[in-house]
Structures are given as structure tokens and as C-alpha cells.
Length: 134
Image 1: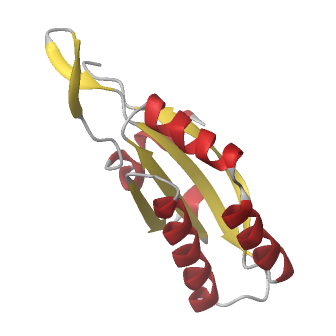
Image 2 (image 1 turned 135 degrees about the vertical axis):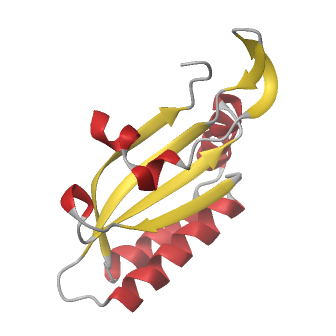
Image 3 (image 1 turned 30 degrees about the vertical axis):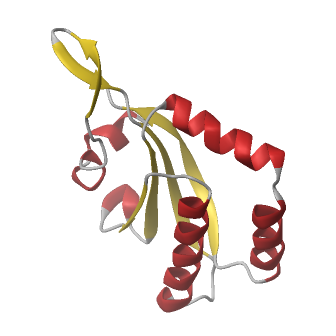
């Protein structure tokens, strides 16, 4: 999905954290989980936004630095939601995964509720890293 990285709504998610050194400049790669979701047929925009708000609250409680949500406009993003879960670094991302693995009860409880009343479905996603100096 190379087109995702060049799209205006997504380009703003990459932030520079002053930590390491790359090409004479001091940066650390920010890790961002990027997910593209679509509404389940028959749900309203308001219901979808409420569910996205629940997701945001959960990911922030689990240790994400920031959670940003964009509503897709036209083209490949028509009728989609882009969810960006930002982590300070891969170490921070790994820490969040470790926290989940140690006690997944809050996430599992949320998933149980969400599966009973689905509002969104995942279309695609993955993990991206900011690359300084390119």
C-alpha cells in the first residue's frame, strides 16, 4: 500500500522525537499502527464515531502516546475511517504489547462487547515507522 504514505490525510501522523542520531540530525523513529476501517452496513456515522471513541480511549489507557482518527474523503478512502495509534518508539509499542499479553482482560472484555454489536470492520492496516532524512 505505498499510496497510503503519500496521501495528505496520513502524512501528518509522522512526528519526530528527539532521541537518536540519523544523518547528523537527532531523531527516533516513531512507530504508528495505521488501520483502515469501514462501517458495518446498516450502522450510522454517529454509531461508528462512538465506537471509534471507545477504541481511542482503550488504546490510550493501554499506553499509546496518541490516537488520531480521520474520516475518509474520496478515492480509495471513500466511506472509511483511518485510525493511527502512535507510539514514541518500537520499544514503547513493544511495551504496550507486553502489557496486553500480561493482562488482556480489559481488551478481551471490550472485544466481547464489540463483537456483539459490530459497528466497524477492518479493511487493511499495519505498522509504519517515520524515517528521518529521506
